Length: 388
Image (cartoon, rainbow, N blue to C red; front, side, top):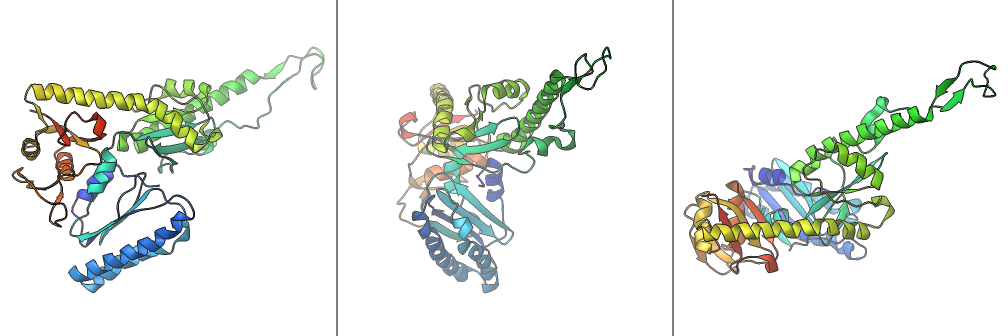
């Protein structure tokens, strides 16, 4: 399951060779609802093809159509969907992204990708990851307050202790016994004893476990935690928590974890346990952002006025932008001057102002957080904290 990361979004925002096709559609996890998904996908392809042929030469249109068609009859692909499917394709790239939130159907053919729906998902602050761990294997999950899915480990993260240690792994079948003592096995009376002790074997196994956990910690930090910036919840038996936390250098690792083997409980139970860990951090983080905004606004270093925020964004002054979840503000936003002109969202030339604000903030190096309505410190849909 390919989830969107800030690095991927940055790549998608870059210039790509047109035509650029952006396809968004809600999908279903279970039968029989998911039987309709490939049909709806093929209907969207017809809409896409019509738009392609209106704007581009047939040879360019055909090349992209073939890549999209290859998914349409893949039964395995359609039987393993989540809540939304995103396919972004250009002459030089092809991306299939799954989302754990439902998005509306949309097909756009243009000279650049339409990424604003991804902005909302990426910046929503209730997301987290779970590292499932025991002495022998690793499992990985990504979710939010409502949904949790098991994810593939990134290339470079060892899935098992054998994969991590290879030939350096202690032979698990090494005979452990004590020989040569009087009355013992095979030894003559009075011979000096030779011990292949259980303590030595135990020490070797514990050493293997610690080395395995170190490699996992390093790889998860590099390939999962740093690219996403998401909180990481450890799910493991208590004794494995002790070992892993002693060696871990992952700053995203939550102080509280789940003291259960994730494979021994249902996905629903695992999500509930994870949210009990994440929710207090999530609420604390939101309150810190709100408090910072209120303090900054009192010193004229923050605002929730749309025109003021638009001007500050274009001047590169916005450090943090809070955006109200599930809200749209129809307006035209001049990204050169910062001018905001309210309009009608039914007009095809009009976009959602909050998405435009978020895109500019990210391009200018700001932080964007999507905040539930009940936690927003303003009624305008935005709250910006300035750098200067």
